[in-house]
Length: 542
Ligand code: TEU
Image 1: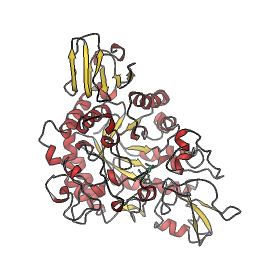
Image 2: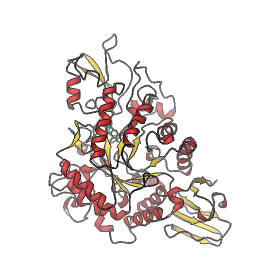
Image 3: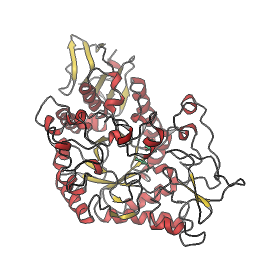
Image 4: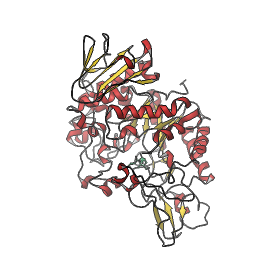
């Protein structure tokens, strides 16, 4: 029997299936490979895995372009392989979350092939079609995230269709009730198959403004200096429409027909993100959690982390909203590289990041390889696979650098990931962080993740304590989780310069603390040092 709200405070481990473990020698990871490596995942002490898409797909966006929502792509295996993966995960006490990409399908999906075939077929309104403007040009100024207009001309219908991402990812029309019903049916298909929940891709992109109004320009410095046109607009009409909220309620009704299932929605918003995340998770009748982009940026300051957490809870606390934080995923530069300039020692930074992330209030997502202190893989232009990387190179290098294979054995060819040449290369810098180099080393980053994950799980303060922030100058981030004797004060020196803090009493940092020492009532934090101290409040430190 699991608690229905097992996901509160839980830690989810994200697997990128194409790059986890190859079992059939084709250079791409697969479900059998994952199943064989679940012991490693379970050994960390996490609660669940999230699998990036494993469904039938032409793989133009590596599975985020689905052409059959009810089957497994042959690259990854079969439905039977998936059943075995779930069974093994459950044996090991791991929940299984699958990625569902509903906002758009692949253009190779039979629905789209039918929809584009004429203006009056049964699926004619399953996608977002619009006439050309009076000059024959695109219906409005909406840009695609991956470059160019969000509209693509279709010669047979002589109309444009909407795609927020690649032209091969046409947007489904959620204003059509039949589309909504089909999506709910797909959810039931996987829930019946035993999945514990869903990660909902681009959950705020489901609906568009039916009047197709232009988005206002983003007149901030970030908007005016953006690398991508997409970041120059405030997407109030192309996404995050009010109609989304009642549909999230319909999705929740479907989830609630089953026990202990969970939906975490990816809220891709640069603007007003916290208000939207709060709204989407409020009152227990929509999403269970909102996946935040806030800590995926290159900002690494006390003010920034404080702002992320405060802004979310200020908006969400009294309506019971719930966040899901992460520092890395398959779309961004790995955090040890992204924040490298704030540290002299990548492994010390990796440990500090682990301690900080796992001290946050909410649910946590780790990304495969993060537990190894893995850095971003430097790739040459010729090695790129990811379309936006190819489009925007070199100002934006795309997402291949965080998607290179897991390295299991430092000495094995291709890091033990595959017998064949992998779809993205294993480089020496990544091999240096292989699992077998760290597994039995008590001083490794991997050992630290295990230690900190166990500590989080054993600590009521970290699992459920409310956050209060200490008033400290940069570069020290301080907050307490919980109150009184049960509270835990967490202090992080987000720099390589030593810091000294006055605690006003003698104290003993918990064993998961690093690079810190007490001198009387003074706490000294060395380079990227941090201390977790029981029974102290946020205002006891100066
Ligand atoms: O990402 C949504 C998204 O908007 C960004 O993370 C985007 O990938 C980034 O801005 C690129 O610069 C989700 C998935 O996580 C991503 O892998 C998919 O490509 C995208 O949706 C489309 O399905």
